[in-house]
Length: 476
Image 1 (tube, one colour):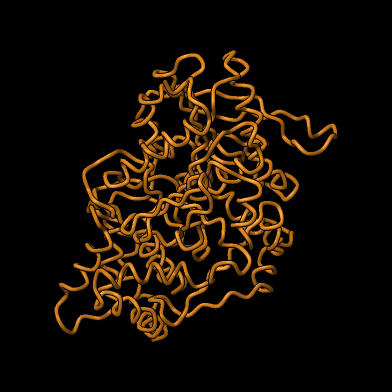
Image 2 (cartoon, helix red, strand yellow):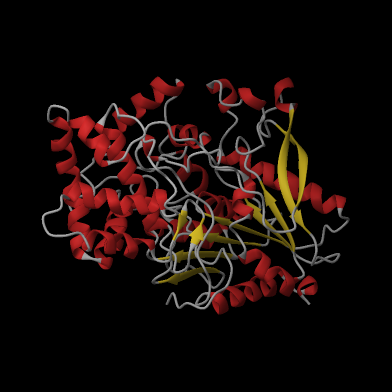
């Protein structure tokens, strides 16, 4: 039985389960680092936070504000939300913990059905822990994002400590301290899962880190790799599609530069009101193409937006069906509309007042402090060439938050530049799962490092492959 298995046996039973479902596993779960243009994070107008579709019980844990100092303020308590499902669990059986990332935990629980699929086989308890400063887990309530003094408690080290404290308390309260814990996460949450195993090996016996770009820092991974991968996804679908999108940016700039150009752009993009800057239209397109490449799943999905199966291919079909002589901008707009309006219910688009439906705003702070992942666009990209200038980036962060980024902190804290040596010496029982059509896969671990640090790679898999329900499609 799973509850009596040794840690290594349990993890390899888990690995066997994942490998067995790799050909039949739908991709979904967790959005990742907002490394696209600042205003490109567009959400569904009037979107509501989803409630979990599964029988989770909502709990709130009294969490310490600061785990690493001993000052009067550090012992301040906030209530951290977590979801729990114990319907298959028996005393001593495993506990599978999802390490929450940058958003409302209900959102992730509603899109991570893979754990529900495997829980009965292991008689596992499922626990989804919300990341501090996201969702309802706000240490300072509505004032949490008010200033650097409050936001200073938002970082990955505090989040990992939150997870460790909550897990240990949960096991004590259950009188089941012998229950093995395996942590799961996708994207930033996948990074946290891998780092948790590194930092707290006495708390978790193993980790599954899906689409976790722990090598996207410093100069470890080429800065252009993310957007090159997005572009390759579209090029693989249709060379004409790739070329139309690549040509749309200059055409859009030229359109907006004419007298009355912004009004023309507004009409072309069916905006609810005239836009004030062409960058709003550019970011709207940019966001649609990037996120669609990330969630190019083989079945209908409703993670970031409601989308059909293989939405990249569907976008390219829209572009390729246009009659000869149509502008690149009109084709690109029609394709991007699939992302924002697959349902066909939107009469107009608000390009400049998008809502943050999933509570992601805290990521701007993290990107300006510790999560510095330079991304650029090369000449091979379908996006306009875009260099990364650290001084410009740093100045923006200083103006917005009054803080300087620490671009080398993550690799100092967790390792990265010689990841094989770091993991061989310091870690075990980590599975890095990636689909090669996911742009973030380029910054993850793609080769086996040891007998217990395994890379599970699917050639046609997408963002957070292996984190939703099983189905009958071949990713290999």
